[in-house]
Length: 173
Ligand code: IMP
Ligand code: MG
Image (tube, rainbow, N blue to C red; front, side, top):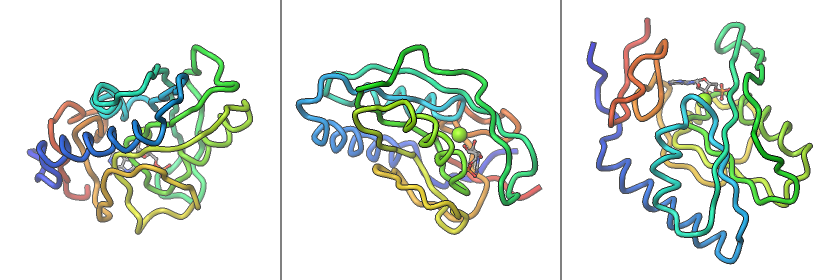
């Protein structure tokens, strides 16, 4: 199966450059920006975004796994890998691949917020606004997309398609 192109490689490249420029401008003068990528899905976006930025930055990762039925009112989330460093007093930007219901980002914001960062903001490559039911703020958003299953540029279906250079959609099962 070949996913249908929803967002081309070129559009992603341009938007990532714009986001990196905006983030770099907003964090000008900050010397301890910490980018936290959420594994696995954010690894490619974070790699490109972080390299296009111009302010001092470091990177760390969190891995979560979800269990329970997707689309359930509250599916369970489990932290499977924590950060290597403390976030206390640091300017933290969470980098996610996708905001669907919003539960995952909400969980991450609660987890990190409790650790007393100097600031805490969010960046997501895509969001499905029609499905988002938790009121989470996305400070930097790449694209709004319709309610379709998307793969590529880090996003997967059953762990496949993550390394596609574009974002594509696949038909419902
Ligand atoms: P949430 O519903 O906002 O908590 O999103 C949960 C997780 O579901 C995301 O972090 C993704 O890993 C996954 N997800 C949701 N929609 C898609 C999609 O269209 N493609 C790939 N993964 C998705
Ligand atoms: Mg994710």
